[in-house]
Length: 204
Image (tube, rainbow, N blue to C red; front, side):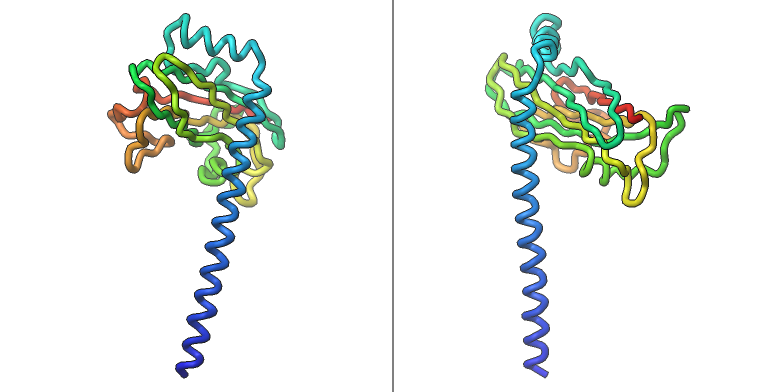
């Protein structure tokens, strides 16, 4: 009996070890994918978008700018959104960007109930949340890639409509338990500019 129990414990330990290794390797892969994609996107930003962000940040006085917050994307395709952040905190600070799915609406403006938030956040979004270290009065441009999957939940085909995402910019540290998909009220002081921004993907 002791030998059998020992074997069962060893087998269980090996299974847990294998699962841990798979999760670890997977996390490394996705982290590298996030960073490599972000760097590739940085290299391809067009001058017009860059100029629009700089204009909003320095000429119009915005501290967070997203000149193109709505894009039409065909299922199976992708599109890039750009977010500009200007630091006015009078010191070098770390900033984080969080993007979370909110709701989806059909072309008739009815809520699409069969979406899976976790699935969409995982499969549709590719970006680096940070931290982005920005010096006082300097700015950073952050790319967010919306990759419209053929599905919006396991086994559920993506429907036509408008998919809404919340965009949160955090300065310093992310508050414990903070959820950008349904931020608390009042909005925490660490939410830069005290505002939740919106990003819309129109799926056709």
